[in-house]
Length: 471
Image (cartoon, rainbow, N blue to C red; front, top):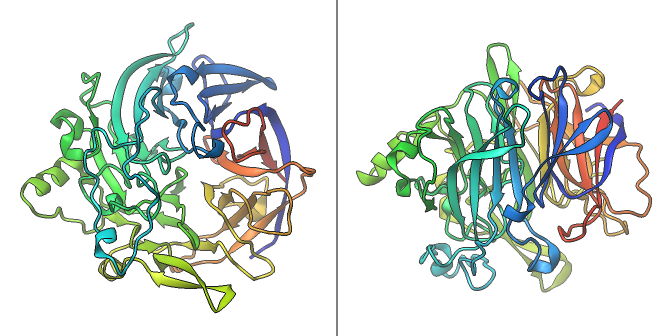
């Protein structure tokens, strides 16, 4: 692939973890404005080169970084503006709710053991008490000449662990006009309860929400499963895909009279994967619930399944153990063999993958996929029509400071797995770490924005910078 080099132009610095980067046209305005949502609960916008506060919901956010040495995957996770935001002022938030901290679904860390069937068939029991926190999805409005205010709650989800809640988790589909929610599998590792493949579990899915239907419901119950929702809420929901581990948002690319969807599934131990799909057959939640009540399975022909937890991208999900005879090597054992067989032909293949260990000189060892965006601009011609992605930090032991990675791929016309290429940048970060935590774009996908942070801890404040990616 063509070697591409870009520059990074700083837009704003000394912000907290920039979770979401996207643009919208404010009511009464004439041009797009860049919005920055931070994990701790602030939403800023940039006007005439000046950063201003749009909304601050920090008091509504669960206490972050209290455990895990300051690392956290909860907080303000999603921000989406209604397609008619300019006229109606509606926008949507996904965040982890203050005061909902629980003990978690398991007393200790989980790792499957293929020799012990009990570890392969765990069940999440006592859900009303054994959970980590509650996530909420809300509808807000920016009234004319007023402050943003909450209108209603769309969903309240009880989450089993602190991680894999999604990030950049709310986006509107230009294809259907509906709000798209990416939920993540609920956390821990290896999806211990196999929530991502269970049709009744809300975790591990991509869901469309019809925000104009049945708007009279103000306070939905706290749930974990679709069948626990009142029917009027079920009627607003459609499942696009399952088999999700954790997704940093969804990107849409117009192709003639249809849209190509791109998502990245964060890997477990071996590989990060980017998927693409065009035509697909979503399943209304009411059909899924009806099939569950009838003890049958809804028709899933044309339904998207990314394969997790049985498949980690291109590989059957492995457990990695050190080799006692040679400490420089490791052993990889298939964690869920029979599940891998079951979904071997019922899953979507990635369009590209990159690996946590890669000896090729022009590649890199990845850590976690943090953003996927289609680029339709022409200022960087070598990237026009490609899919750009970011990784949190390249794994290089010789490097004292962490560095994220910017890369791109193209979709092959034969839909087979394609290679990728690292995008070179000329910015000098000095001795400061630079974790690439988010990737955003404007409304017509002609501009790319990069968010980075100088620490892996959400409790280390004001170490973020947002850049525009330029030629």
